[in-house]
Length: 336
Ligand SMILES: *Cc1c(COP(=O)(O)O)cnc(C)c1O
Image 1 (tube, rainbow, N blue to C red):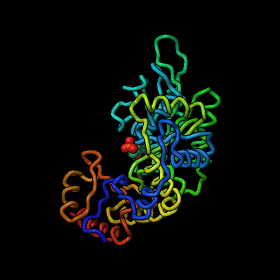
Image 2: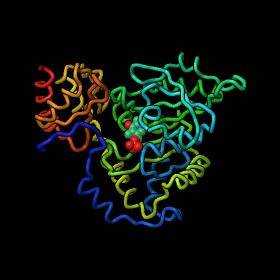
Image 3: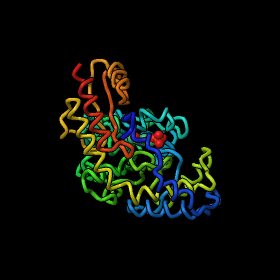
């Protein structure tokens, strides 16, 4: 058991011994020359998991999102997304800064698809006064909505609508693994609803770094050029791709443990556990900063994501014992 239970984010995991061994012994080459066999293996495997033609390894999920969205929307065009989407809120305006797109948003309590609102927003060609809509982006699971899973039926309906109006769909699947484990929906079924997507290895899967863009061969070829343009061409990076392959082998199914731990923590802070879909619990506190401080003094680190909103995230480095300890601390702090 750890001295401190850190529930601030699932990005805080440190590579396991076995993962470090896989990294140390990885076969590598210069990936800018497209000669790193371990990167190739990771890219091919990930593309296949989602039923797409190709994939591209990137240092961060933000870069993967920027590269992916860029393949479906260009300068002066807009992307529709949910108001709390990571692409809109947490990538520091990267999409506007690098690729010159704008965004308009709909709001959904679970961060999901509101097709009525999307239809109202969608405007691909309103003449020379309005920004043309090129694409619709969804996030699954939705981070700031509390790790909620977007139902596959809603994604399928979105895909059908997008096809009917000629729009592209981007999927921010930073935590698509959690959605897959929570619902049993195949990764390829999530892949099918997207023209292009981004997935992270450095969240619940426990790799120290790494994300991928997944899409058509043409989209990935373009993304490879733009990745280099943005300074993201990496060399013997198979050493990191090996961590990703190890995570895919060993850290996907165990996400169910994180989900069970999240439900335990939810109960402790008075949140109905049946509303917790995956590994994130978001809840209201009159004074979020005060709650964070009081929990921290008792050895449980949590994060404020708004003045009255606290977030807890379970992950590979939080055992069942850690979760039980944290639950008793947080329920005591919440009761005050
Ligand atoms: C973490 C995250 C990303 C990518 O973040 P990086 O820190 O750039 O790797 C993208 N989308 C969502 C929903 C995320 O939670």
